[in-house]
Image 1 (spheres, helix red, strand yellow):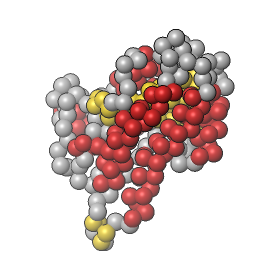
Image 2 (cartoon, one colour):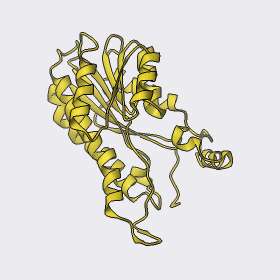
Image 3 (cartoon, helix red, strand yellow):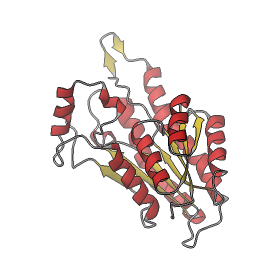
Image 4 (cartoon, rainbow, N blue to C red):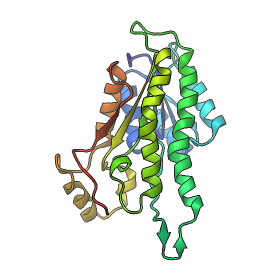
Length: 254
């Protein structure tokens, strides 16, 4: 899939991995729509990269449909690239100090991370299916974000690991279903990245987390996620797979 001239949308594109990806796609010539729950920050990033912006909760079908429609109209070739980085990492053990953790806590995480991803996939795939195929027969590329927690979930990550495990598991059936339409589906499973989620941590703890990575011994940079996302778009043989982007880390129980 050629990036220059393609319309792209990045959900969760106002910060962290999503912002880096939106900027990388724009730098390579895509017409990028930044979609995020933080509409104000999305507007700022969209303006800086010469793209569009939409406030969107990935759980909201109407908001996601509106963002997808706006993105599809941003370039003559239609929506060709969709990257979903939206998600939360709220911790929660099964049993807390006051008894069982309320079920709503787990439902919220799964609704955002897993059902939100499915919501984005179904609406973006529909828009892509209307595209004219490119010379290679492609109509679009869908990139999801899982986590190494899908494989190495830590204590307190019950809902997070379950949600990200679901994102990893849906990758192949989505790719198989959409193959007939010339749409690819891939998932990136990041390790420990230096995102706003970690910015509030003490520097000593941040260094400790980076030291756990076999190599390179540091926190990963959002630009490294973005670079992989761009390569996935460009490499037509990448389909139906989950790629760990983690420096070979395997998370300890806690």
